[in-house]
Length: 313
Image 1 (cartoon, rainbow, N blue to C red):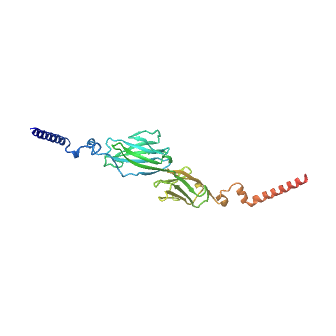
Image 2: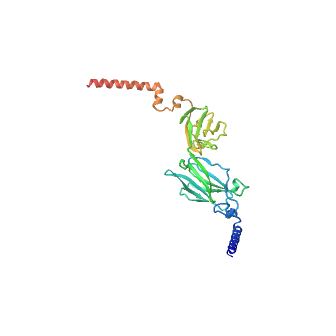
């Protein structure tokens, strides 16, 4: 009987294990599909709808002119209830640290030059209502503002895109002398050169305080941009010069400080002296009838002084 009891015990234990295994499979399906934390889709996200992502059709390398306003455009599709933040990667004591500038339409930085704009969808994509654009605006931008700016969306995990801002100082220069003397009836030609210029900048010419109208017959203005060296050149030509054309000529663009030159329209008197900007003593030295008597008198007075000194010695 002892062996019969042992067999019965083993049979009962086997049945109990089978029931436990069946119960386990009914809970988890199978041991291969037991869920592990951190793997697989998040059931909460499945009910949130489409997840945000960036529209790649925007420029990430932006060049701005010093003292102007810089714009960084970040476009996000299917944003939903998520927030968009602008973060600057700034180097402090040799360590790159993130500095939050804006979140949504709220600005965190105390620098009032920074703000964020949310453009209306109809301005750039009237047919796509899932696209939103968040623009970081930096007024009176300076070279120290150059660096990396990050557009971040508050998803889990967070997604972001980096932008690089390069701030350059544009300068205008008038080719030639700061004072020009030209004859009445001739043609005036002035050239203004703007370095570190942007492609769509425009140069305006001023005569004293008035904008020069190139629709006049005697006026011609040509402008050329060289993208290989980022240089903008503008040439002003005025034919049949008259005394009213004398004055200050300035080339001005919104992308650089202005440059000026003074133009004098003359009728032919002493053209050599005036073209070199000579005045005062320079004019006297060019007229022999003036300077020969003066030099002779100097020598006579010097000779008399020497004789007087020897006499009273």
